[in-house]
Image (cartoon, rainbow, N blue to C red; front, side, top):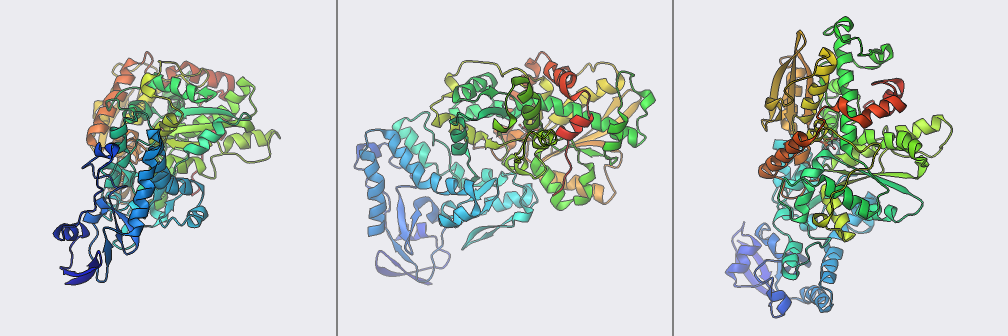
Length: 621
Ligand code: HC1
C-alpha cells in the first residue's frame, strides 16, 4: 500500500492507483461550482484550466489525473490557497466586458509562456523556467501539459523509426536531438492537442468564431513565429512576400470550420494580401520549377550511367556538358523536397547522400528566385525583401535555417552588392500558425473573395499541386520526363498506382524504347525499408528514381497540418489536390508560362551554371 495525504487526511491506497481513481473513491470533487451564468454554459466540459488540483505544491489540470499514479508521501489538495488564487485569477477575467479578453488571458497563461519562449532560444527557455526541450528550430515540448501517455514515443518509434524520444514517467519525454528529423508527427500523436481543448470549450460558450486562439494545444507543438511575422509586416522598411505550399490549399480551411478537403487557394491569396504581404506568390510555381531541374538532373544521371544515350534524345533537348559534370552518377535518384526525409537520410544512411537530388525543394527555390530574379524585375533591394513561407511541415523551419540555404546572398555578394549574410527564406509558419496569424489580424478566410496570385512567380500547373500528396512529385516528374525524353506528349496523365496510400509503391514506365522502374515511399518506416534494402544490395537495384516523403500521406499529413490529421483527413485532402490538378488548364510543369519566362529571362536553361548556383545544393550536414 501507499500512504499519502488528501486534503490533510492521511490515507492508504493500493500501488498503481491513479490520482483520478483515488479522488473518486474519496468522493472528492475538484470541479468548479458553476454558479456564474457564463460558466454554466461550459459545465461538464471538463475544462482543464478551471478544473485543477494541487499535487505536491504544483497545480495539475484535472485531465492529467487519470495518468498520474499515487506516490508514497504525496500531498494532494482539492482546496487550497494556491488553487483559490489560481481560480480567482481566472474567474476575475470573466468580469471583463469583452469575452475575448478571457481567451486572451488563457492564451497568456498557457500558450504564450512556452511558445514565445520557444521561438527565441534555449537560453530564453531557461530564463523563463520552461522545463521542457526544444528541437530547434521546429518543435517544443511542454511537460506541464504532458500526461506521460507515450503516444508520441510510439509514433516516433513505429511510424517514423527515428526513436528520437523516450518516455520517463517522472521527467516526461526526453529527446535525443541528434535523431530528431523535425517531422512533427509527435504533434499529431499527442492526445492533449486533440482532447484537451480548453479554448474550443470557451469558443463554444462565448461564440468567438474567429478567435485567434481557437486551436488545440498539445504538449508537443511547433515553435511559433507568428508574432515575428506580424512585426515584420508592420515594418515599413521591409518588402514582405509570401509563398504557400501545395497542400495548404487543401487543409487550411479546416482551421476556419470548413469541411476537410475544401480548396481555399484563391481565398488564401486574398487573405494574405489583406494581411499586408507586398506580394502573394505560390510555392506551386517553384514546384513546377523543381520538376524541370530535378527531371533534367535525372536525365543527366541516366546519361552518365549509360542508361540513356544523348543520341536517342530529341535534338531540341539541349544537353549541357557542364551540367553532366555537375550531377552525381548515383542511382536511383532520390527526391529531396521533404526535409524530414533528407535529415533522416543524412542521420541514418549517410552513405546514400549522393543519391539525393541536388535540386532544392520548392520552398527553397522560391526564396532565391524572389531575392534575385523577382527583386530585379520589381526594382526591390534584396536586403529589404523578407520571404515568409507557409508550410504543412515543422521540418521546413529547419530546412530554411540550414547553413547552405543562402544562395541569393552569395549571388549579390559576388556582385559586391551586399555584405551581411541573409537566408533565402526568412520565416516558416505551419498551416496552424497561418490560421493563427489570419485570426489575430481579424481575417476570416471563409469570407474572403477569390483572387489570383501576383504575377511573375505565382502561376502553377496541375503537376505542381499534387506535390502535396504521396506519389505526386513522381507523377509530376514523369509527366515532364516522358515528353522531354520521347519528344511526344503523354496521353494519360495519372499514374494511379503511385498515388494510392500504400506505404511503398512501385511502377515501371515505358519511356521510348526504355522501360524504367520507379518507387514511392511515405512515412519514414517505409523509407527505412527501402534504404536498408539498397544498403544490403538486395533490392531496388534497377530502380532509377524514388520519391520519399517523411510524413504518412505526404505533405497533406505533415506535422504542421490542422489537428486532427489522421487517415480520414489525409484522404479527403488528397482527393482535393487531385481535383485541383484536374481543374488546371495546364497540367505539366514544363508548360508553366512563368517558368518558361524565368528560363528565357534569367536562368537560360535547366541546370545552367546560374540555375545550379541558385537552385541546387550540396548536403553538408
Ligand atoms: Fe511539401 Fe514541397 S510538396 S515538401 O510535401 O516539395 O512541406 O505541401 O511545400 O518545398 O512544393 C511540404 C507540401 C511543399 C516543398 C512543394
